[in-house]
Image 1: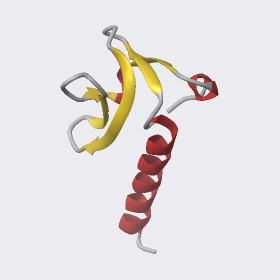
Image 2: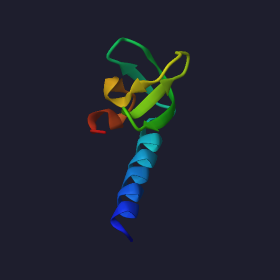
Image 3: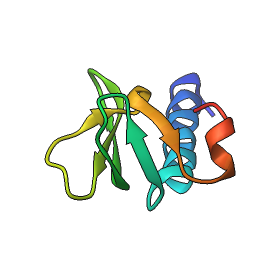
Length: 76
């Protein structure tokens, strides 16, 4: 596998892991918004971004302050 394909595969694997860990989970963002994660996108300018059910917009994944369940102790 070429280096470029290996990097792409690593990125897509990490995106899939983040989706499995967060979609459908309740989160609280640093700005106080709370809700269930609907979707995760890979944004070429900002990295991983999430949408929260019931709120318009997309936020950087780094704005998650608290997450539902035992995964909240892990790093993303």
